[in-house]
Length: 315
Image (cartoon, rainbow, N blue to C red; front, side):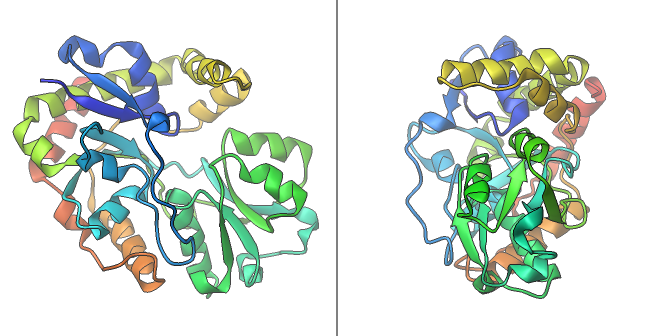
């Protein structure tokens, strides 16, 4: 059977795995689906809803069977009634990004964001980070003006004055850090663990256990290679940007990869508690149409699959 795997650069593990040929040894008929080539999600009012981003394509003909994203997309999928299940999570990515402003902005803390324009890649982990930051400051989603930006495009908008604050992510955040004085309003570590995560459809998991095991094992092997060869792994990202007509700095990508955790871990109670809190907060602020139980997306046997792969390929 053909197993379709969705990938894009923002999930570093799947992006490198796409280029390594490891999964093809176990699944000769694997088909890689570049998420950037799929039609975008329906536009969504950033004040009143969440775009589905990548979860809809798990349930669409011509989509994919397995996907890796950040923190928020599976919550969105569950709220839409999608029968998704978690595969696994990375370690904490607390150095991946943070909420910043220009030092000259006059904004001192997250509490000063009331009425301000804050740039996020809406529907991604950045939405959750901003909402958790607002909660900690005693504010709600309605108190700020969220602005949807592409993950690394908020920097120029911040410098132009089109944004008052921005959730920046590496390696894009590094360039503005070097050229301008920034103030960190909220880091990631004080809010949540911010792991990468992988998920699939329940029917795919239950009917294709061997294929799912192959994907998890290949991810573990590829992630071990990334940790041992971060500069060679960084080259894949630089080459991809160049192929699309842009330019990326190899040193910055290498530093970004060195600062990120690799390896697939079983979902655990701490992660599920974070997901549930975020889901409840999203619903309370009108960004989800219903409350959800994230534990409904756990299949216990998948935890065993991930743990077995961790034991066979240590990262």
